[in-house]
Amino acid sequence: MQVGIRVSGADAQGKPFKEETGTLAISAHGALILLHARVTSGSVLKMLNDRTLEEQECHVVFLGPVRGDKAEIGLEFSAPRPQFWRVTFPPEDWTPRSPEARTAQPIPVKPLPKR
Image (spheres, one colour):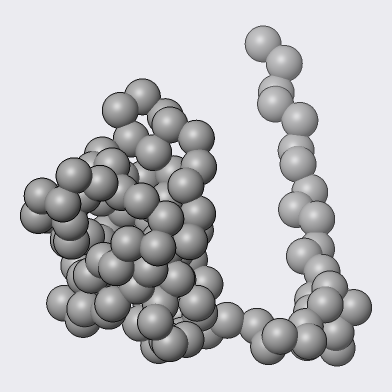
């Protein structure tokens, strides 16, 4: 799920930065993002949710591949905050076989008329 965020903190050289970006994936524990600023594993950053303007402290827990001029960065909240994203996450013990899981019914596709 993509959510607009603003990230701030100190880069790998210790210089302060603020950057607007978005999430690649979210969870109750944090997010995977693309970040132009170079950071180090364990860095403490602040993440601001653009929709709610709520800010959360997080730590860099994953340094991934670089895409163009941005790197994939995994951020983990200092404490789990599922309400930060304003979405409902399935319970930890959820599986596709859970009674709540529903399979989508296929949508019939009509062939295009011949010309």
